Amino acid sequence: MPSFLETDRLRLRRFAETDLDDLAALDADPAVMRFLTGGRPIPREEVEGRILPRFLGYYERFSGLGYWAAEERATGAFLGWFEFRPLDEDDPGVVELGYRLNRAAWGKGYATEGSRALIDKGFAELGVRRVVAVTMAVNTASRRVMEKCGLRYVRTFHERWPDPIEGSEHGEVEYELVRADWAARAGTVHQHMK
Image (cartoon, rainbow, N blue to C red; front, top):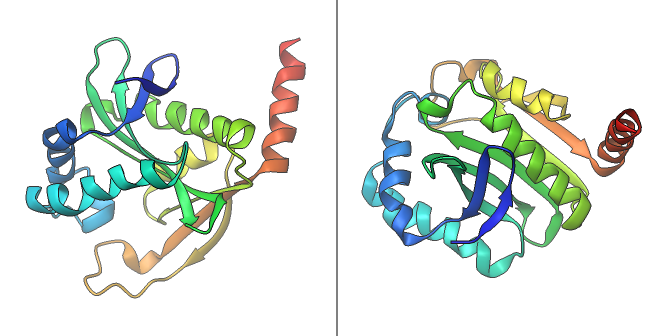
């Protein structure tokens, strides 16, 4: 399947029906799901009947926005996914950034590498005006990725969850990067490279 985007170490591509096993395994890992479901695995039937079809549906509605399967370029191994999709389907200029990687990919800089590449493509080619990302306040690893990608902290807010998970009492945090700030940073980077 052709790549949507490649970095030094990653290949991001569209999901396909054949990704079901890898996606189900990712969502079944309690460590991966810690800050999403409190560690409760998502049943394979839900991945097959709801999650994968939702991922595939984005490609029909939006060019260049949606969910992207992440593979290691050197081996082709499935590492997880990146989300770069409109918050509001009527306004594709404001997108949410997200990522979910398997444990073997943690701590290697993949989340930052893939996120930066999507952000750059979004602002440079896809007409994105604002990138937002949200995580639990206690998810320090995800917050570090957001900060390394140039997103800045906006606010802490509290949701009423029917089934609160450990740490949710500290709230959720929102980060953002707007096009002007990205352009200023990109210009600085290019000037230093000359």
